[in-house]
Amino acid sequence: MLKLLIVYYSQTGNTEKMARAIEEGAKSVVGIDVDVKYFVRPEELAEADAIIFGMPTYYHDIGMDMKNLLEGASKEEINLKGKVGAAFGSYGWSGEAPNMLLEIMKNRFQMDVMEPALRIKYNPDKNGLEECRKLGKTVAEKILKTSLT
Ligand SMILES: Cc1cc2nc3c(=O)[nH]c(=O)nc-3n(C[C@H](O)[C@H](O)[C@H](O)COP(=O)(O)O)c2cc1C
Picture 1: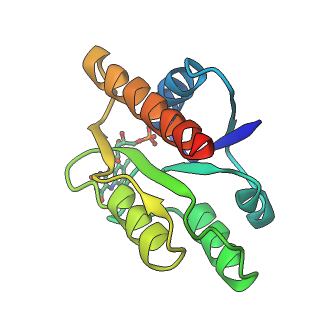
Picture 2: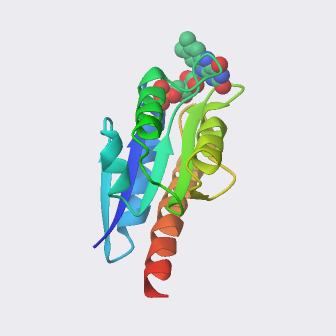
């Protein structure tokens, strides 16, 4: 079964709501095993066919846990090349974190990223949650399509 992994962090729940809606959208595609996690070991990234990273922006930056994960994956030479990737996150005013994630996914890990990152101000509303569902569905459909060709 194809694996889609959603790894996210959230302090006040906004990015978590996005993660759950992305999960819902991905699960609407038959044939995909969707996992949502808060903490993963770098090796777990290699087991996924697609990875969607979620990170809220605090102090114009991505959080330490995510940095440690990416640094660990880099040091351990985890091969993510060509895997489908996307990034998302809630923010307040500047929202750098999801773009920083995409940049690392693309340039360090040579993932096949979907751009732009999905960024939503504070608490996602009905439309925002729909955008999240769409992202999950699109990524799931993409790996399904790739597996059939
Ligand atoms: C101490 C603090 C620092 C923040 N720094 C930023 C920032 O640099 N840029 C930004 O866009 N939002 C910033 N925010 C806003 C958060 O990104 C926003 O509240 C977001 O919805 C939090 O997502 P979460 O609920 O998933 O933790 C900050 C919020 C707090 C409390």
